[in-house]
Length: 243
Image 1 (cartoon, rainbow, N blue to C red):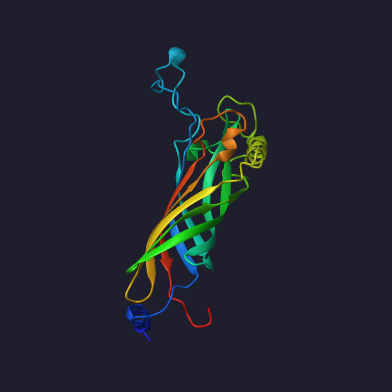
Image 2: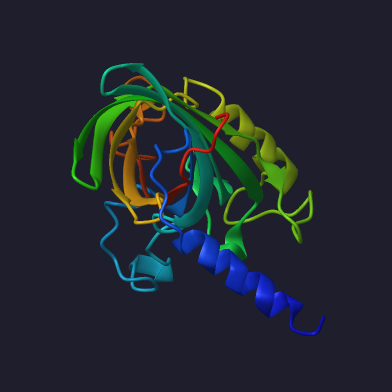
């Protein structure tokens, strides 16, 4: 019994090494990073502490955050080489309210903790070459976000030069995220998958979420503000009987 865990691990590794001649499962698991571009303070050139009167320069908010991401994709062929690929991704970002915007925050300045679900309904065109499967496409995306008062932050706490309490900031952040179609993100998709001897697939997926809402929302910000660039490692199991 003492060697049971090692035996189970060995059996699992043997199972993965058994050659499988089968199609891919429609399900793909992925994990990676999400880079969210933050343009706040892009025109600031002063070194912190060196402005007139000793007012620090730099950003009220955090530099463009890079957050971890996990997700699941399902593929369904709708015509030859064309697949409908809905996916769901989960990530977390910390925000504050500054400059009339919800902006990413440094840990010491955060007000809100924001769990985020990205629903991507992309259509992709695929090309298979030997063991490689290439895909490219795009589609509509919906970003579901809701801000909560971050742990360790009092509802009456104030930050920066604003007289707005943390609780009020959270309300403003939620209103901002759900106004002006800021939840709508058209997505671009590109990926490559390599078929292993076992029948499993491993690959890389790149996706870009385009902040189209910046064309009409206020306050005015550069168009790339809040652009998302997602890079993920993907794992696709082989198809099992009955799938």
